[in-house]
Image (cartoon, rainbow, N blue to C red; front, side, top):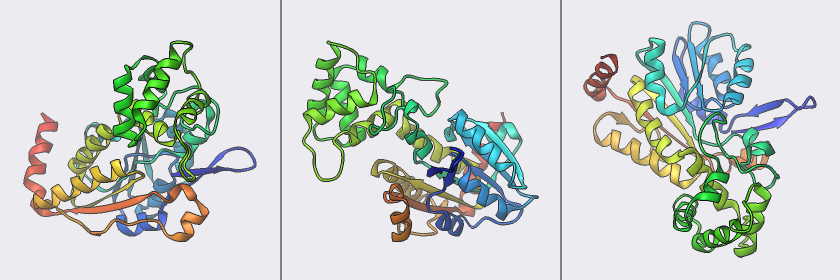
Length: 317
């Protein structure tokens, strides 16, 4: 997902792969649609036009600020809209609390919002000086600074290698530990400069790119959240319903691909599009941040009905 600003400095959302999401999600009138990662509501707003006034849109997000802005946007959507401050990992419980049995269409957009990336105070980007925060939900949890300044050297190396696929992970971890004995590493620029000083630059990619990705994943427990979100979404999906997932790096996409294949092998799902769907050249030119996006889609088949009913009964006990 990405945003730009208008002359009044208000974020204008440009949802990634909007045409493809609409095509493969295929929303229908009267559908119940869940956006598990609402962001600023760009996808949800367009889906709302398809489900109409008699349909319903439920939007979940961990970021209270994004949820507030999306709620304002959705006032113009002319549909039943329910915002929920929650992780997509808790989708099944959210629907139970709302008295909703199943959803017809579910979208998971796993990317970090450009609004988050571009706000220096959120600490996601090495391009802007700000505190090392990186939390999706600013109301809870440890920050990137907490990890950088307290984790053992071996743990830092593991994070950078596993979550960032950084081949210089040990060298970077050692430099961080040496630096923090002199003074804490508090800002994005401080960390980026440290990494740049001990890692050779390769091509156009900034040396700190993988380290910042790895820290963001660790701070928000993103990979575990993706796995839990996929299972929760699957338990929330009606027979014949569709799940569309947008991922933005290989670690996420691998989890999505494996989950959908496991559902297919169990006889519970049909892969509506067997090959991964990527953004077109024109979208990538207009929005370079969309280049890494991958879309996968599957549909729940009737074969999954029995197991899903058992899961549903468990939630109602």
